Length: 324
Image (tube, rainbow, N blue to C red; front, top):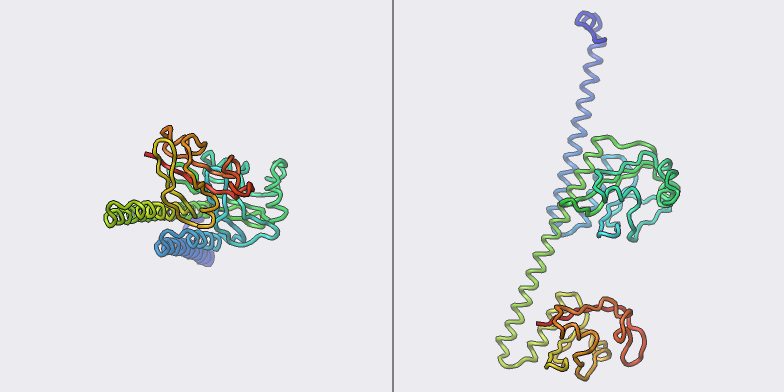
């Protein structure tokens, strides 16, 4: 039953206490809102001062989110369509290692299906209901995690990653804390998109620069193909991040070596000095008109899986060749 004016006037001390309580609540709400806005602004500042660099952004997001929530441990994961990869971590749960990629567990599969979040109030109960998934038991027993919140990083409906916050006590997160972590997840997506655009722009500029440099060699070496071929191989390897490469020309029957670049000892050891016939397993697809011939793992393919001199297995190497 609400207080009447008469009863309020009759109890001025209670009125003052109520007003002081309401004032304290409003001051706490304002302080909390200011703290959230400050953390958000600081993360955006890191994004602006670290264009294309995701690690400092991810570290800042975890640190700010966790300081606001009062959590002990959390991780930011990226998703490559098959595995989750830890890229930033705040806090270190005892006896719990998370360095390698891993496949989605049942909880994370819900996020893959489009669910808004994963909120495990009590990890012990959650793990007991899923004995076939020891990962949850490990989080509880080895990591000491009792409450976990995980929200997705999405772009156009596609899952890019997950950000988590974990507590070592059973204390579910409030609606405001969930909304704040979702806001930080959105900032992480902005940083990832910025990094992607910067990378694409840089790669396009590098390609244009390499093309211009090759054209310059062509203009400065009229009628002399050797420096042109050498420049093409050198620029192609630099753009692809490859260690060695060859350029061969085709006369209708065989491929002839005209340029090479990279680790000279390996090049001379691996290349065949004689022309390569057009029916060679690796080159034959190009003769048929295929755009590229791509050998992903030399160890799994014969005869390229063995050193032509010693016959020993080669380490993994990959390359692609094109034809016009």
